[in-house]
Image 1 (cartoon, rainbow, N blue to C red):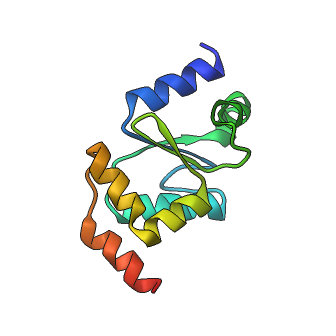
Image 2: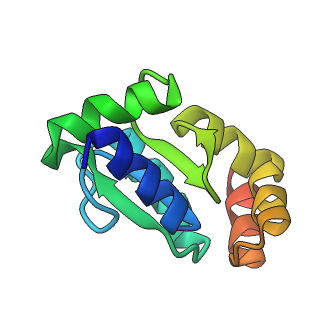
Length: 119
């Protein structure tokens, strides 16, 4: 399977996917850590893909999304964005709305706490 086929299968087979440096339990960069931390805190079940483990995936995801940086978040096969976009969406409540619209379960109280802490 090519890197593109692997990526396509991963984002199709999982409701929420985070392509990141490291893993959700051991992020290897601050940006990946921030997005994984938000998802973990909000209780979102997600598939993590460590791009450091496979150069083909690391480069392939940038081409697949036409987005130059990692991490990259996908929800129900749709590219959402990287760290800055996910952070903005979390603070504005847009991420909650996206999860609700897509039928992804998350802890609304935890999401509210993130916003309160950053107000």
